Length: 212
Image 1 (cartoon, rainbow, N blue to C red):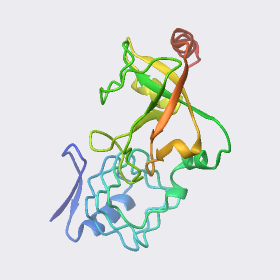
Image 2 (cartoon, rainbow, N blue to C red; image 1 turned 180 degrees about the vertical axis):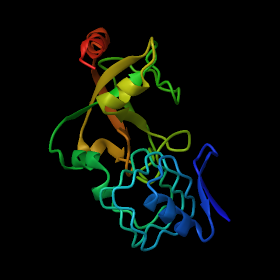
Image 3 (cartoon, rainbow, N blue to C red; image 1 turned 180 degrees about the horizontal axis):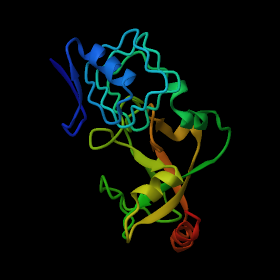
């Protein structure tokens, strides 16, 4: 009996056969594959069209020949996974084709330090660079992936906590170290300049007043 579990250990489905067959049976039954642990799985020829694999662990998985049209891979861990077309699941790749200055956002604590990988203290008006920033798009996060991590505004707001700030940073396409495949909004830079700070009270107030 083969078990398909989530990354937190909870059981999704179990059945006889290979992990590939169990995944396909779970998909056909309409079970959620969000957060599924598929490390080193071979999904050759599997049809998972439209499947939600958000936050799934696909480290070392072989996706060659798998049909993933319309599948959601947001936030999935894809280290060493093969057979993936980044252009089909990473909208932020459009940044690499921008001809001039680009702006994104940097979430920091009250003292200007990144909340997840404390190191640089960011100040408006200053420029920063991380030598040796990781350029592998299959690698998602610190601590083993150096770089200046920036993100979309919605990502920053989802991760925001009381006391945090959101800075506005500017860079060019050449300053991008990596846009992780299927990123949920976060990517890393070689260098950038902090050019401003978002009006968080205004943003948060607007969110509270928006119709539910």
